[in-house]
Length: 368
Ligand code: GLA
Image (cartoon, rainbow, N blue to C red):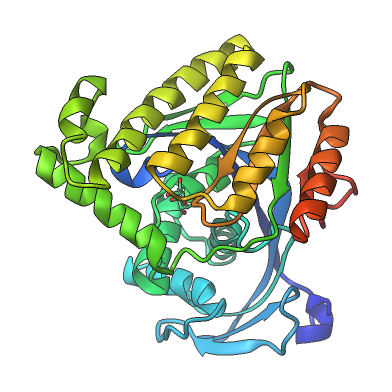
């Protein structure tokens, strides 16, 4: 249903935000480390019209049920998708921004649970729409922080800041190099020497569930035992000491320390257009996530191994939080589509899963 069919008048505001794919720097953001995500063409679109009073009505074209209502300033957590919307008006109200009632329609081409930040895309698209509709004086970095706060404190998912920063700050064809401690950032153009490929595994993950939280707690425990504020404060010279911690804390720390170094190396390789070096870093990152951080699953490992057997692929790795989701690959320019579909078909035949090739896109409009 269109906005007009739902609410009887056209929207005042239309805003959108993209999903993101992390190139490298996984599970480093909540450790104060470096990340290097880029945006994907698929976006979440929010249409909105302010209403008198505080009543909010929200419709999701992807869920298709009748609009859900709540009162801005009196948000309640339900353990459902609407929490991401209520969390945003909750975070704005808590920071003293005046948000009134609104009719809202959401439509997303970012697949859910695929490690491509459907939640951050929704948060940022909604914040952009609210910022415009209610003339809120917030900048892009504040917006990213509000999205994270909604997710951490309202939805109950203890995520870092990477996704919101990527969705807010990175433009098409740009990677965002972000220091998650200082929040210093710069954009690095994607080089013409590689073509980006993203294939989903068909296995969905859920961040609010325990594994992500457990990894985060393990990192905090490792940092505490090693006497540093965050694992970001460690370097290669600390790894012997870290590996003497009780299992699995040493391996968790080793992933974070080596991954931070790989991000810095990847930024240099990206700037130099060095496809072979980027590919090597991708595989090394995947192995570290699989063996030291233990956030991969057999289906994702299979996708990476299938990629490894294709000469036109430089590198592949699990992207996002893990326990399902998608694989990001770097292919020889012009070869991405063919390579991606061949790998996805082989994977589907071996596992019975239903993978999707998200990049390169096969249809205009971004709907997989
Ligand atoms: C999820 C979180 C991010 C980040 C990644 C892992 O996407 O939202 O903050 O921690 O997992 O790198």
